[in-house]
Length: 593
Image (cartoon, rainbow, N blue to C red; front, side, top):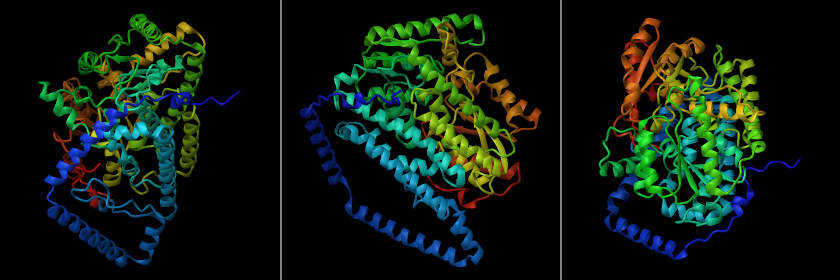
């Protein structure tokens, strides 16, 4: 049996029809913008700023050299083998990037650098499959620039990790980055402003970024791409400032500033034409809230392409509503067939869902380990990987399953050794509840490194884990409907307060945390109605609940620094503790990637 190739290699080979005249006009426009910037730049001040930067660099190197010189022989050996402990040194006020890469000790720095090079190799090989449209994408879309700092995002999310934990996190983020790189190539290749490959565009089914991908498993000859994932959703995690132009644009059209930044950013991206123009049809959803519904309505008018709105019952616990969900799935399959000419394949669907079931079993194994006294796979990359694998990969890519097997093998080895992901920093068990801030994706990393608060699991990762039917067609449709009804966020925000309030205490009993990191998304009206009940019931159970305000994709409302300050205040005033790494207690990162 031939090895399954994913994504289909023929997608990369489909012919481009680039409009070179339009590209020349775009380059000329950019050249004029660059000239204007050059004319308006105070070069004397810019030179002075760079000179100061070099002086600061010299002072930092000298300061670090003095710190090493003051160390005892044992401390220097520990630095050489286990790495640095003052991670706040990596930040510099006003800088977008770290001052340097983290020193993790000889072995772990070598491991880290190997994966760093391997990721660059993957990026170069992937974009090299059709390079010119992607290069033009850099000139057409500002969001493309932010992906140049993808390695910085990886470094931030691995900060402080050592040993097996470092390896596992690198393996997981590699899977995500490969998926992102391939889909960026496809978007730019099919985009009318870029490669203009009409042949590829006819094969693309665009999905709302909150819509799960499993449905596309039955269409192996088509390419399902979460439309706003790369230009909006993941972008906001990699670059905290990237969605601000989207929000400002849509608010200038009259949208209230207190709307949820996710649908607002999606609409703003459409307003300023930041979304590539491609695809045969668009599948939207009613997930997870009314804001998503309104965004779907707005984008439908903007995209000017056939759209199918997936609308599942809100009270999904009632099995009597399941028939409605099954009918939605059937109508959506028929819609895709009519728009693309492709036919649904049960064989292809069952093959992918068997993989997805195996991946779910590996996920449950991770949960079992993390519920013990020696959790292993924790941290922001694992949190991101879980959501991506559950919602956007969903068993479609056969390359992911071997990676998950490898990760679990490493995890069990570390568990038998009773290893610590953050060595000497495993002070408190915690879980995260409610919606996390996109612009502070590595917040759980800071919690562990600064205060020893180790996040075992987050709410958005606790979703549907029932094995999907892979033999009976009717049963498969019913399970697929159940899965879609329990999408990321929808699982907890739909169907009544039991799914978010009572569910928290069920998870507290299972994971045994001392602390609940309770995110308070200031623009989320659904969660804010339950604040008093959460507080009251936490006190009854003796659980420390730390409320962290944020505005999801807009760091101007609540900064990263303000989020950290809430934890600092609680840990010093209530817990009466000192930070494990005082250099991380307070630092300026308002523009840091």
